[in-house]
Image (cartoon, rainbow, N blue to C red):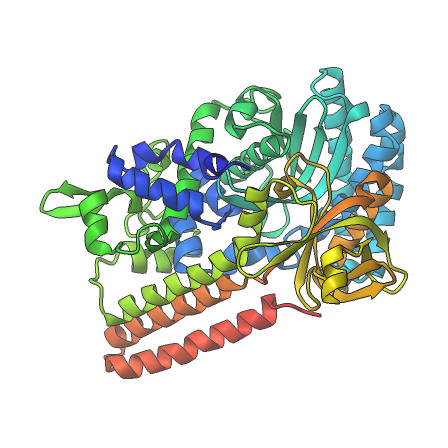
Length: 579
């Protein structure tokens, strides 16, 4: 990827964000091109479809609640997603690729049950834990949604939107996109790399946090975000344009609802809804850019950058104060909302049911000045943003490389290597990667490759640029030299990587050509959301202690620090690596 392509879609909206201030735009443009930060797709979707303040509170302040973290808990529908991730690609490759829609319908029960049993036997969480008590509910939802997928594929074929005989399917596809600075996991993608056409399917269950039968605005926005990213994967320079031109379109499939599959795309309209698709795609660019700019460290572009310089270059006078416009939520994210985004005044949707209402009032609508504890919290946050940026540095370096055909050192002291072949090890949930030993390694007497104990991301060669290739995350188990060959074993035996192994094995068995030309990079475990959550707990608890309990600030900070540490410890136990 050329440097000019990094942040390309973000830079398109910069003039509007900074009110045409060219010096400010130039600094921000360099910052966007030079940062490895990526914003979660779900946060961008919330900013577009529900509330930009909610997205900012989660991504920047670290505010959190159960609803905000629900995607990691059993009972939300994740088990249904897992069954579909295995069963649907099998149905596609065994029947739909050959246009045998009748055979696919008849086989739904068997394929869904087989996928369920295999996942439970393999100990994949959360389905392994909840499979016994919720088996019938999971199977019922998965059967219905698989049937709706087959219905969708029949219609796509009849309308000649995608040639299914030349298409391939990817499930739980991890995406890292630096044209828009977004990362996320698409539930299911059916794509034809020859014609560069595709459909993105988002599974949404009616159980738990995901709500009712009609997709919400943020759910629709999330599906569009993935459609943009898949367009980039297929080679389009501007994913928003490709989506408007119907090269890629999004569809939502649920386990209930009268309109199912559900699509507001003009390329495949099933819902009778007045909808400005171009405006939505524009809002996605504004939301992603606003959230990235909120965590950007511009001292990396200009080491003299500080608050005074920011006000001078990026400030606009409003009354008797100078406002830095790029730190304000862009107007486009408010304009078509038919509700007030202020929890103090709005007692209805979305504020009434928002789990971040207290945090929103504290950070955005309290009107309190910046005190010592606030300054301390913000300094800590920017340190954490730096740690997060370092954790994402290997992906940024990989995006700039385009492709890798040997050993290289990536940013952040990470490494990447190219392997000629991949095979599945008979010893547990492991993959063995092989390549000939290189001359430099013979001279040094040590292999130059990824290192033992490091997280490893395996990229298969199925996209023009390696950063968009299908990838799976494990851990480097061992590195050895056998004769004239380097062997690297990547393990997927961690509790939360077993599904990755399952999907990798399924994919490579279906498409054996993907065993050749594999790239592996060392990754980093990014747990910065835990750090941000503990900082949020510290800041709010201190202010509350001083205001409500009349405690001295030093004592309040001590108690708040203990509370923040307790939150951090509990979150590490919940989210931390499990081997």
